[in-house]
Length: 114
Ligand code: 5GP
Ligand code: ZN
Image (cartoon, rainbow, N blue to C red):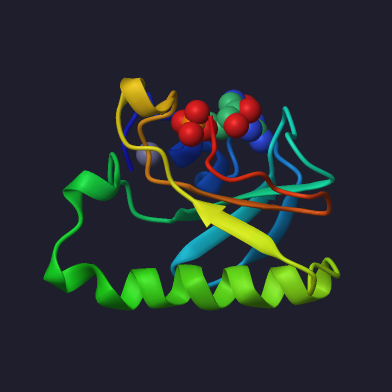
């Protein structure tokens, strides 16, 4: 837990959020400023600043995040297509420095992204 981290606060239950699911190592909650009909953030419970800080020992956490994403996509009815992405660094739009994956769907998703 990192003291001044917003998403650590959500994981700990100190900051309110619309929690979708909690697993042993990850928490999923709805984005406060949704960019699609489904916009869920999936965060590892342990504080990691970004995907740039992952290593070979992160495999279990990532497997949990990806299987949770697939389960939530099915539950949200996104069989037609969905996107799971993480921004790394301010130049890519990262604004919260606790690793999180955006699960987006429910509308056509253009490529390439902006
Ligand atoms: P980033 O820009 O770092 O990739 O994504 C951060 C995301 O966190 C943004 O989509 C933003 O809307 C969301 N966000 C920021 N503050 C809060 C909050 O307090 N609660 C929730 N649920 N989402 C937040
Ligand atoms: Zn954190």
